[in-house]
Each structure stands twice: as structure tokens, then as C-alpha cells.
Length: 265
Image (cartoon, rainbow, N blue to C red):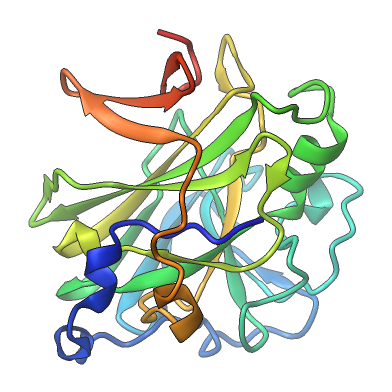
């Protein structure tokens, strides 16, 4: 999967503006190898690392978990939901721990809070084994494996003092059969000064109740600056064009236009 980077000019910003931000690498969270950490009771709780707090929402007596799960799994085996909290890259970007997010379209937004307002340089993103298996092998919910016209997109939003910022970042987790299988740096600096991040997911495989592709993705080193390799490739082209029309986010692929739920307009 080619690396995906947005707003190349932002990658050239002075590193001084990021000096006070502490990267969340999740290594401060005590977790044995090949395990995962999540809350067990009905609650909304937060995991803290670096300058960030990551929300997890547990409901229905622990049977539903949305938001952040801390994982140290390093294998890429998928045999069912018990394997949902794994990265397809085989472990963390660095160290042992990383985060798997499940984006629940019907409940609370999956939130990351900053200790204080700051410009967030970026983060590393990867597909989960659950989503990757669905896209490459197919399943009973999403249907056949992805074809050339399919897509799976992460949308990153932000707020400052409770007000949404106009900018947003789109991350192509899959474009047709080109499916992300490695940790990939995503530039978030175009969002400007913020104190909250939250996520939505969009894809071509949707049904009556929304997205059928498993809405899981992985992050690591939240708040990290772009590695040299990323800066040198910030002009990489993407096939999909995302924009806002009449206040609505749309995705343009060829001569077709879709909304963020995957419905053709």
C-alpha cells in the first residue's frame, strides 16, 4: 500500500510549534505481550498516554466496546471477533503497545482529547486484521473481496473549545485492491490548533444500517512528527478526491460521487 499524506506544505512547518506535545506511544500502559486492555463494565473511560486521553465506551454489560482498546498482539491471525484487536502490520509501529479503534456509527463519537490545545503533527495508522480479512477474503456482512471500485476511508475531524474546525483529513485504508497493510504516517497538522480529535469511517460496502466493512483501524505514535521518508513523499497522488459541497463531505472517484456512507449521489 502506498503511503498517504495530506497537505504537504504543513509537513514543512517548524518543529518548534510541536515542542510541548508529548507523543502517545502507549508504552506507559502496563500490558503483557499478546494481550489487550479494555474496560469491563458499562462506562465511558479514558486511557492516557503522552499529551492525549483516548476514549473507550463500554455498554450492554461489557458486550459492546467502542473507541480505544490497547493491544500488544503481534500476530496477524484472524479467526473471528476474538482476533479483532490486532494490526495487520503484526504488532506496533514501535515498541509493544498500540491502539485499535472501533468506530461505532450509532453511539458516542470516538474521541481523543489533548491535555491542552496544540497542533498535532500526525500519527501512524494501519488496518486491523478484522477489516483487512473482510476486504481481502470477503465475509457474510460485506460480501466478496474488494474489487477495483471499492474503498475504505478513515475521516479525522477535530475541535477546539467545543467547536468543530473546518479542516479534516481523509486516510485511504483501501483503494480498490490496494489495501493498507503497513504502518503509514498521516499528517494531521493541517487541522491547526485543536484540543480534540474524533473519527468517522466511510466505504463502498454499505447496507441499510451503514458500513458493512468492519469499522476498525489501528494507531500508534500519536503526535509524532513525520519521518524523513514521509516528508520526501508528501506529493504522492491519491485516486480519490474528497471535498465539501454545500456543507456535505463527498468522495469523487472517476465520474462518480459518493457521500461518506458510500451512497452514490
